[in-house]
Amino acid sequence: MRVNEIFYSLQGEGRYTGTAAVFIRLAGCNMRCDFCDTRHETYIELSEDEIVRQAASYPARHVVVTGGEPTLQLTPSLVDKLHEAGKFVQIETNGTIALSLDLLPKIEWITCSPKTLPVKIQHIDEVKVVYRGQDITRYEALAEACGAMRSLQPCDEDDPEKNALNLAAAIEYIKAHPAWRLSLQTHKIMNIR
Ligand code: SF4
Image 1: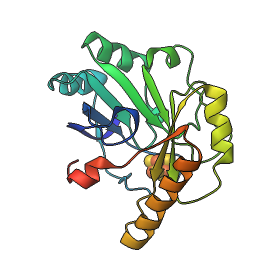
Image 2: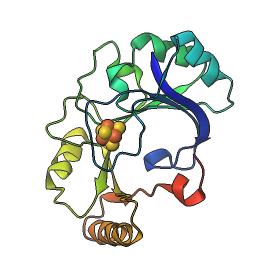
Image 3: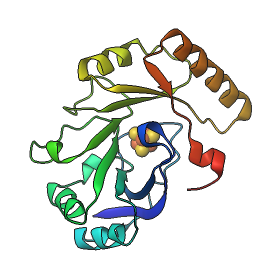
């Protein structure tokens, strides 16, 4: 598998914010978002066994398979091996790829940050919207249809003034639509990975 990096930190965003987690960042994405902070071009080839060996070397049970777009490479056998190592598997996906039915039920938590609609992934536990004040009515409908929790995350535009506007807009949206919860990129606030 093409892997950008494997590292140990705290989950900074969404439902599991603050949870110690091993991050397996798989390389490559089928989207090109202008706010993307992932370096797509660098990776190393690792076997599934080597990925699991590295993940198992950390004490946390929680594993986040992220990207890039992790569903381009994620396999049922990797998830099985992570389970055999005692891990809980969360993925962070853009939702554009349908999962095989031998993979989908194995994943304990699917966080989808939709970048385009309709999404193709068949199940979502958490809809996490990167927010710049845009109309998110269609994401409301997606979360409703999936019965997913709703996380609204101010977009980091690498510009303090824009970021302050995005945060203020997210707070106001949530106050008016309390089914949503604020998701901050707390790893950036804490200055950790
Ligand atoms: S979907 Fe995610 S990883 Fe892919 S380009 Fe967009 S922000 Fe980056």
